[in-house]
Length: 446
Ligand code: SF4
Image (cartoon, rainbow, N blue to C red):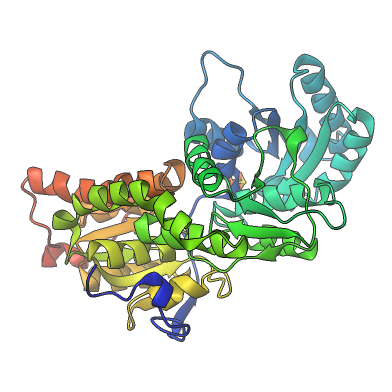
């Protein structure tokens, strides 16, 4: 930590702010936006996600979310079958019938999302029209909205972005002249939200609202006095929609690691003129815990070389955390999309000279990865096993989205997520190098 510039003193335009970015368009290896339903349905506790898709979509969702034995799930797939595809049945009528059945049986549902998929988009099923029609019929009990989770254009975290962007028009307008409020956008685990809320309360900062809320009826009001703090780096459309309604985005890194969390909280404190002494005193115990917890993993990670395939859009903040707080060396940091405005602070904090890539041409990136022979590769599930078979150590990117990793009290767990695969390999006695005779072997990316 001594060799890096304090985050508050990082020069604008420093680090990788102006670094060239390798832009690639080719075959991608990512999950689709339906995956977001896994964490979204847990967050909004009276919402239901009805995917309009194929059996493939149903299988993806079922295997990603698991089976709930004791509770009825709050997601399902309305399967488009041959009759719909052949035009023998009116898909809109079929959808109405399924929705009426669902809502009659599940009166606790207050918000229903019709989630588009590749098949629904291919047959051009207009789910926004369906949502308007069904909302008109079921309001005020149930609001029906739609968004796309299809894999045609997206990477999996865009599912959350699309879902939240669909909610923005439903947010009430804040009263004119209302006191400033802090709006934190992006799904956070409840435990993380509660930790942040306690810190904001202790520094007298508020009112603070989280978006999405835990209940559909608790949508926060929005207006020119809303100060927007993004908790997730993949909310381009949501942020645009919120800013169009007057919210002012606060410039900050993302709350990963001790340093990122402090700077993220500081951005909010500055916007609400929190006394600096009070701020420092408030965060001191949690910050100390975070520093201690991450320090325990530093011996296993410092000096290790890491390569990121583009997957979750968390790559840049993670790379910043791992390089600055844990001393890892960044070989390549790939991201599906690079939002320069949202990533401005993160880019400035990355070590100059880091190779950045946006988009994916998986074969070419695999070649670069093999040539680098990094100690750890962060990638999607489809690449992890084949790369392990080649002798590389991998970390599943999706695990970083499913796990609570934001905030001071999660910083040690976040570091451990990267240390664990290296330690496992060490315990198994597998040498952390790629065997040259396997480097050029064809990769089976099932
Ligand atoms: S939305 Fe597309 S990519 Fe996702 S499971 Fe369905 S068919 Fe597959």
